[in-house]
Image (cartoon, rainbow, N blue to C red; front, side, top):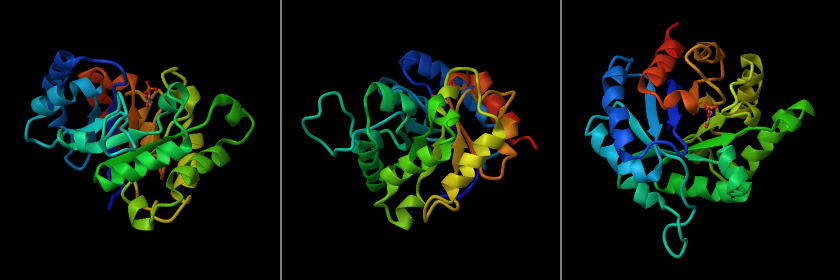
Length: 251
Ligand code: PEP
């Protein structure tokens, strides 16, 4: 069962090799140690750096590991894919599923994303389901309906107990990597709709993602349904990621 303690996840995308990952972890661990233990922190390096990250993080569990995606299948003839059990070898705690870049470039459908969510839950890896609308959909006034549709497709057949073990990330596509973050009231409107979307979501962490920076993170955290961040660019530098988290929770 999840709770609504703050969670910040750094999505590194296709950045950092193994040695750059080691350097980040060495710089970041002392900074993370100064943050309150009630704040969940995770980094999502590329697959090729998971082993280096796991080794550098050591046996302490202050900073968890996340994967950027995974296969919906357990094993077999799926060239290039990575199974949940392979992630579990590195104590991966979270997996980001349905990121808009995967939906766009790898053509992942809501049905595939739903299968991945089920596979992650079965492997006891917490899925971070990313949802969000394009600028066109927002300007047409359909952002809430679009996000709720994505959630219905990906989680419709889950039990309440399974849904309660998820994390949701609202990431408006037009705000990712653009420097144009979504205003916090609009993000809250979607987060509130997400929380009400289905049984099991009442107490899950809902994250905002999209150009979250040290300067704007605190504003989102003041919103009643936003519990943390899925952070791309600002998580690549240890000092910036730590400053973002520290700023976000300083109230
Ligand atoms: C992301 O990749 O999930 C993301 C939110 O990126 P950025 O923070 O760089 O907009």
